[in-house]
Amino acid sequence: MEQLEFQKNIKINRNDALIIVDIQYDFIPGGSLPVEEGDLIITGINLIANIFKKNKAKVVLTQDWHPQNHLSFASNHSGKTPGDDFISEDGAIGPILWPDHCVQGTKGAEFHKELKVDLADKIIKKGMNPKVDSYSGFQDNDKKSETGLRDYLKSKNINRIFVCGLALDYCCYYTAKDGFDFGYKVYFIIDLTRGVGLPEDSIKIALRNMKEKGIKFAEQSSFKS
Ligand code: VGL
Ligand code: ZN
Image (tube, rainbow, N blue to C red; front, side, top):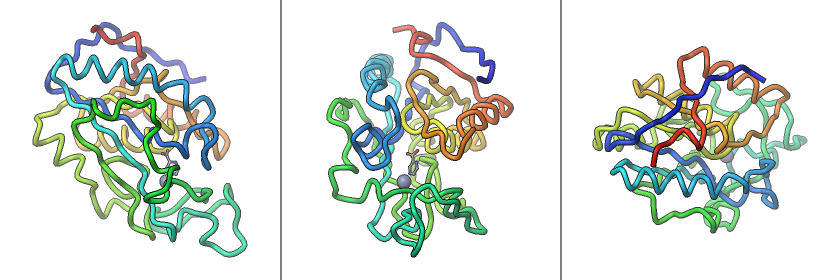
């Protein structure tokens, strides 16, 4: 794996935000798009969220929230199955198709019951446009519309964001990248995330790209209470 350096002794303050990405049943083992060991990070995420609250920082949850006719679902393309390659010109959908997941109003779209949702200051839903996916918590994949996360962080004078959750190589990665491009100092909490690993090497590529960009890496133990 990519050689990563971890930040130590991070002291959280009121200009920080923790972005907890997509801790929903469909991404947890037993769900329709399960991320291996996705359940194992929830306790640690709750602990870190408590540290953020104690230090007057913000906690944001993102929630993948698709209509049933969403074009990222293989079931909405004839002759396609989940995992098949699919790339639309503007990057709106792809690079692969997914099983139906996080359909609005279904159990699979709910936050996992172990996640301390009451610690959240803000919940950002994404992926509602049936023709465009939204891996990033900030904006759609075609970069044509934002979710409201940037406006929210701006209104709270946030300058550092800390990203954790599911999945490392999709929604966490895109959220971290956009955060960096929008001018935030970004920390990726490596042991509080897990990846899908599809297509092959997606985790390795995500980590390498983030490191090259200047995104910093942290671990659960990096935070001072
Ligand atoms: C995600 C694939 C499709 C994620 C969401 O949360 O990482 N991945 N939709
Ligand atoms: Zn999705």
